[in-house]
Structure formats: structure tokens, C-alpha cells
Length: 145
Image (cartoon, rainbow, N blue to C red; front, top):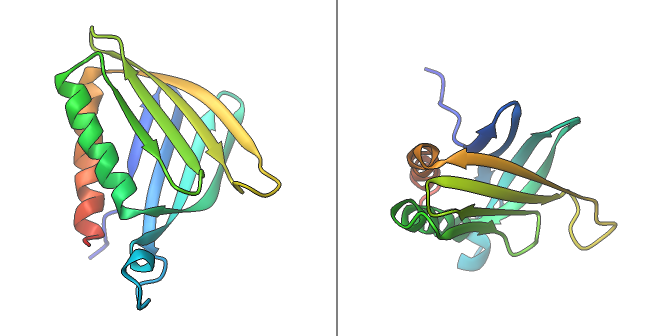
């Protein structure tokens, strides 16, 4: 039986950002803080730019993003932000109050040292938010803590 890939993805036209958690980074650590890091692949396509890079996120990054998305879905003029401690990725989803969401993405493959960044925009409508929330639920099931 093949395992289903766990991820969250935002697509708009031919552009997308896909975040694929792969495994706990330090699952045998003695420190609970360290046991909450997840090795992740970030895949992007934005206009003529495309690529992927490795990153590390904490479980709380995914949980907080899901919580903010749920609120934004019920309050269409609010924002939801995925932002990690190390600054590998920032996704800012801002609602206009009418069901349209503008998404500003900043990606960095090596934050803090010889930093390379790419910034781009995507646009979605409110009907996309429940799917994104379900994807984040899948991540929480796969990486419980």
C-alpha cells in the first residue's frame, strides 16, 4: 500500500507554493523543543521562477496557520500568516471582505546567511480555504505532538 503524500499547497493559475513535511528532524532528542521540528521541502513555481529547497518548521507553525485560516474563512476581511522562526517561508493571506484573498509569499533557501529570497503574489477565493484547512489537518495527523 502506497502512503499518501502529506502537504499543503496554494495554487493560482499555473503558479503555486507547496509545503511537504517529510519527517521529524530530531525525533530522538531529549528536549521537547527539538522534537517538534519537521524537515520539510518547499516547492514553488512563480512566473518564470521555479525550484525547491529544504527547510525546517515547527509543528506549531502549521497549527497556528490552520487556526488563522479558519478565522479568516469566517471573517473574510482578516489575514492568516504562515511564518516560521527561522524565516524560511512567510505566506500572508489577506482577505478583502468579499471572498477574495491576496497571498504574498516570501521564500528563502538559506535564511540569515548568504540569504537568497524570492517574493511573489498569488490570488485565490474563499472556496479554496476549506481544502487548505483539510491539508493542514492531514499534517497534524501525520505529525502529532
